[in-house]
Image (cartoon, rainbow, N blue to C red; front, side, top):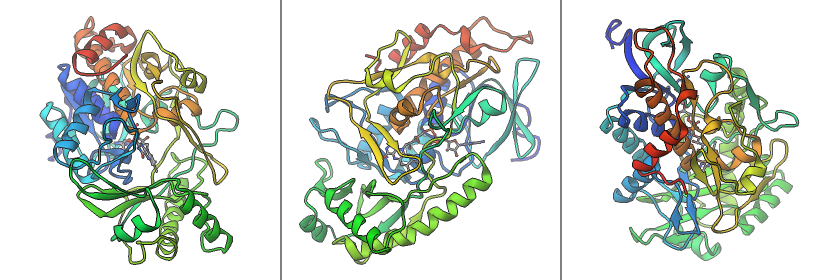
Length: 456
Ligand SMILES: Cc1cc2nc3c(=O)[nH]c(=O)nc-3n(C[C@H](O)[C@H](O)[C@H](O)COP(=O)(O)OP(=O)(O)OC[C@H]3O[C@@H](n4cnc5c(N)ncnc54)[C@H](O)[C@@H]3O)c2cc1C
C-alpha cells in the first residue's frame, strides 16, 4: 500500500482483531450496511482457530442435536461441511468438531470479502484514538491508516478497550490468575489401525467422508500413561491429561495437539508472553517424545507445523453494563436482551495446578449471553466489544470463550456497531460520537434473527 492510499480512509465501523468474534462482527456490520474494516495482525483470519492451531469447534448443540448458534457461525460451519473440511457431529451426538484450519481461514476470508468488508491482514493496530470530533483514528506502527465512526474491539485481550480507559478485570476473581496457555502443533503420520486396536474410541469414522479419524481427549488410558511418564520424569508438562489430539479433516493421519500447559501471570505483557512462548515450544519436543514412546500408532510421528502463536485462553474482561457470572451460566439464566446462547461446559483450566475443572450442562439446557455484557460501562461511547473478553467472571467466560459463542457475540457487536454508526440519529456534521448504548437491543435481536441467528 502506498503511503497515501489508505491514509484517512473512512469507515463506519472498524473491527480490530480477526478471530471468530472479529469475523462475526465484520460480516454482520457490513451486511447491516456499514462500510466496514477488519484489521488483523496475523496473515490469516481466525485468531486462535487458525493462528494458534486450535482446529476444533466445541459443541454448539442443544439436546445433542439442534444447533443453538446460527448466523455467521452456522454459515461458516456449513461451508466447511460443503468443502468436506470438518468432521461434523452426526445427529444425536454431542461432539467436538475438528476442522481444517487452512480451509477455516480461506472460508472466513471469503465470507468477509463477499459481505463487502475491507480486510487488512498483517495489520497490527497499535493505537486507536477516540477523537473529540466523534471519529476514531486507527494507527498501525504509529501511522494513521483510517478513521471510523464506531470501533469493535475483537482483540480477545480487550486491548482497544483497556487503552481507551474502559475498566477491565483480569482472570480469577480472588487473585487475578488467568488460565494457562498452550502451544499447539501438528504431528503426523499416525498409524490409525494400531491406534484403533490399542485405544477403543480414539478412532472414529466420519459419516460424510468415510474417513477414519483420531480424537483423543482426556482418555482414561492416555491419562494413565501421562501419570506414568510424569512419575519417571519423562514429562514435565504440568498437566494430568491430554486435552486434545484431533485429526485434520482430509488428512486424518495428521493431527493437531493441545497438550502443553504454560502458566503466565499476564499474557498481555509482551515480555511475559515471550517467556511463555519459549516454555511452550520446549514442551512440544517433550510431548512428541512421549507420544512416540507411549501411544500405539504414534511411533513414527514427526513435528509437521507449529502454531503462529501460543494459544491464550484468558486475559482481560471488560467491565460492561452487566457482568455474566458462573451462577448465571449454571442456572441457565435467560435474559430479555439475549444476543447469543451457549451450552458448552464450564471448562476452567486451573491457573495453578495440573488439573482442569469440567462441568457439562445437562442435555437440553443452555444459558443466554445478554447484550449488556458487550457494552463497556465506561469509556468512549462509540466502542463495543465481542468475543472472549466481554464482561464476565472467569467461570462464565470459561464456557462462552469457545469459538462458536465467541463468533456469536462478535456478530451481535457488529450489528450494534453498524446500527449505531449508520442508523441511529446521526452525529453527521456534529462532533457527537455515535453511541452504542443508544441502540435498542430489541433492534439488534430483530436484525440477528432476520439473518439466521438463534436466540431461543
Ligand atoms: C489452546 C486453546 C484451545 C482451545 N480449544 C478450543 C476448542 O477445542 N474449541 C473451541 O471452540 N474453542 C477452543 N478454544 C477457545 C477459542 O479458540 C477462543 O476462545 C476463541 O478463538 C476466542 O475468539 P476471539 O475472537 O474472542 O479471540 P481470538 O481468537 O483470540 O482472536 C483475536 C484476534 O485479534 C487479533 N488481534 C489482537 N490484537 C490485535 C491488534 N492490536 N491488531 C490487530 N489484530 C489484533 C489476534 O491476532 C487474533 O486474530 C481454545 C483456545 C485455546 C487458547
